[in-house]
Image (cartoon, rainbow, N blue to C red; front, side):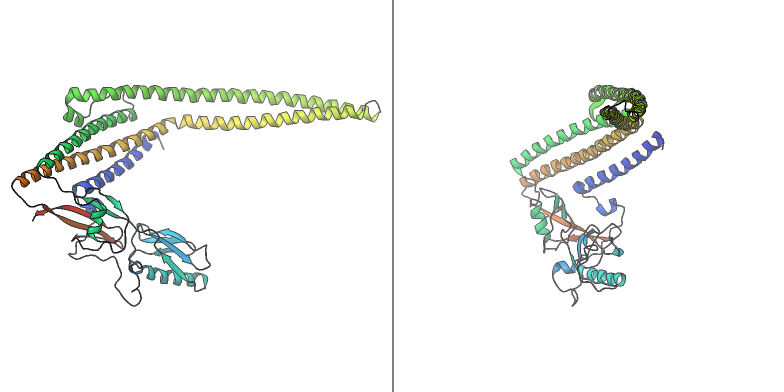
Length: 436
């Protein structure tokens, strides 16, 4: 693959990852439709989509036994006296788990009891033995609380959890303070807005510099979005700092490649020197062997002592040892040379990959900062409205709740109330409602 083809593939991956990251951030804070952003049609059936199997004689045990499995659940499967078939397995996006010897087994949409029966049947068919199968859920998927709460995020699921519990885990409802508190909130949020705007400008300049480095451009122009935010002169100040960084990084890369080439050159010289050293030792061994041959002839005639033969043999053994040591050093030097030459050959591609990763992170930061800016702007507007409504004696804002639930391979979206029960993996979105 040529560097141009490699760059194209990496950029395509980067664009996809940044698009998904941006979408996720916008969904969390702005209340967009999560299921539509994921490219799936959401189902709003007008009723709560249950994540538990209907109660019956076969599965009327604990809540955990009736829970319908979904992708992402981890199953701890224990088959009696069959450690080779036991273990922890995660349900994939296709709703399947892969088990040794048994192959692919459909798990999504089934209860634990149904899975135990299915795996026991497959084990019997495969091994000819009716094994006892036990399945547990060691870790349940967390719930996600988003929107108008003080601490949005992921929280562990607990049995019999309801919307009220999720809101409590999220730090309670976010309610704009009225009066003087509202003015303080506006001031605080305006400060966050300024910080986010500054980070956005810095990341825009950073991305422009990284893209210029990736494309090997000698000049760096301010991006239009930065000029729009800061003006031409202000944008140039941000770019000037990035130009200095770009020049220093170019110098560092140049020194790195020079160092690698110098290392390769020295290693080649070492290999040549070792080869000469080994050749010298081989010549010495040949001379010693000829001397030993002559000494053996003299020994047979009684003209040489046995101790003299031992001395010659010790010399030959020492030379052989030196030869093996030189050969080992030569092998190590050749290995080092191959590694160095490989680093030289891959230097440009590795630099491009590092730049692509930096650009990817910069674009994620830009998307995150833009979302934070919109959120701060919305909060400032709500705080201002709350202050004016407080002056007029208006009632507080009643929140609305929306749950996005995956059951089996389907995704359901429905309106909920404070006492609506939750399931593992639920996304709870707290949204502005209406004034009561």
